[in-house]
Amino acid sequence: MAAGQNRRVTIDDVARQSGVSKTTISRYLNGKYDNISFETRERIREVIETLNYRPNRIAQSLKARNSRLIGCVISDIGSPFSALILKGINDVCEEADYQVLFANSDDDPQREVSAIQGLLESQVDGLIVNTTGENDDFLVELHNKGIPLVLADRALEQPGVLDTVTTDSYASTYECMRFLWQAGYQQVAFFTPGNKKISPRLLRYQGYCDAMRDFYQQDGAAGLCEFSIEDPVSCPKMLLNFKNKYPGQRIALLAVNGVAMLHTLNSIQEAGIEMGRDFGVCGFDDWGWAGLISPGITTISQDSRLVGCEAARIALDRISGNRTGEPMLVEFPNRLEVRGSTVYENP
Image (cartoon, rainbow, N blue to C red; front, side, top):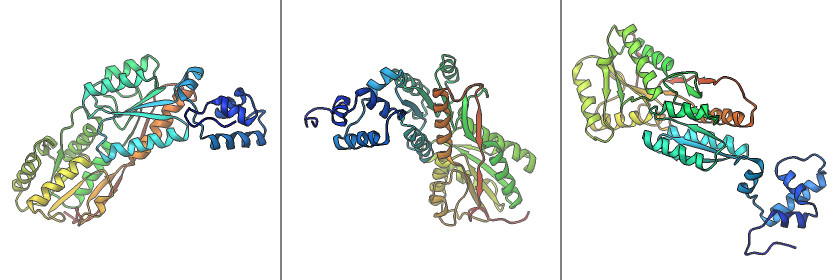
């Protein structure tokens, strides 16, 4: 007998219409097909589809002692980079029949702690955190309590303590600076909305400073242009100051990430500056529009979706016990995409 229209379909309804026990239905739902014939599996599948049955995950978690939920804290959901990380996490978790509960910290350390506490109260089986970099002790404490926790993109100040998936920020920045030097640019500025304790930004700035020392014999700190996103005149002012400081020279700027790149590009457009031979522009994150904006923007491309996928795989392996041992670091390489905003000319 089919379930009524005004109540939730239960496992009893499925068992009754399939002509099998609730235990058999439960084993089918959990993928335990031993001793369930192909014909019975097909009959159960058809009944589930006909009744539009959705398992009660809360009830299942009470029996299985896990929720099949992954908690994810993203630093800035408005950033395409963060959205791609979350997509990678969700794709892997969905395939493993896990749901993702996510929160946006908005790069606020207090909101990050509150978000994590809220997710833990929701009985998530593990956490994936794109951290602000301000709560290292708190995250390590959670790890020491046995909570599966993986960092996505951003690492702790002390390496080797938590599972971490990121990209090679230092080396790709250093090689980009080598390219700019070989292309004949005489001065390079580093544009950032603030590095704070965010590990990729700090590593990129270190790569920039080391390259300025090695290739230009200059102190990189002199080329740091730290602008305020909240102040609309901050970035344009720094851009014009940098341009006017070196009249007649070939100069270039390196943006720390895609958000910084968008702000610098808006400032360049407002100032009527032509990108290319005399004013080179490059930076992190290849979000699709970089090849469309004339003359094409040179970018350091990183696969943020892949970072999310790998972070989710490690988290699920830690939860299931398939991965044990010391915390691991996975660091994916980046790729320099050269376009018209940096024109090569031997020095």
